[in-house]
Image 1: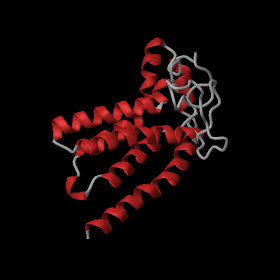
Image 2: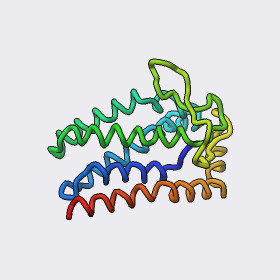
Image 3: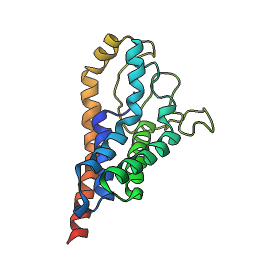
Image 4: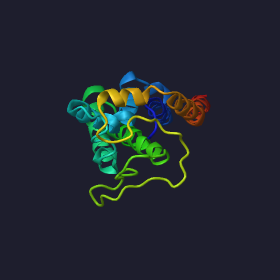
Amino acid sequence: MMATPVGHSLAGYAIYRFLVPGEDRRSALVLVAVAAANAPDLDFAPGILAGAPALYHQGISHSLTFAVAVGLIGAAILRAGQGTDARIGFLLGFLGYSSHLFLDLFGPDSRPPYGIPLFWPLTEHTFLSPVPLLLGVSHASHTSASTSEWVSDILTLSNVAALGLEIVLILPFVLLTWRRRASVEL
């Protein structure tokens, strides 16, 4: 049980708003930040293809190594396609991706291995906050859960509550970036 895609997207958007000046706002830049913030959960894709969506979830894609790689990819894409400063592309990719890891660290985890392999490949040790701040989205009670079990586990009232709490906790950061940008642009 980790954060929802909505929570991850809000965090990515807040990072975009914080890093990108008003005169440089382009859809490609927000897309990189929000996509990077959700990218670690692409590890559901091979599991879905295998008929057990959670099979590979919370694996090495939930590491800072992948955050660096996504930052480099973001820099290359934005530099080539948009002529954007590579540093902004790297930061949007790296910080967007890292925001996902940060939120997942503060969610509950009820399925072994508990936590995420944050420092892979240096160590395979998993990390999880001893005090969860988020309710976490429930998506599978075990890694071998079928796709139908996975979907039925997602469609619950507890996940609506998890979504609501994330909005309450993350939306103020988005609003602060709006306020910060407005005061900087004046």
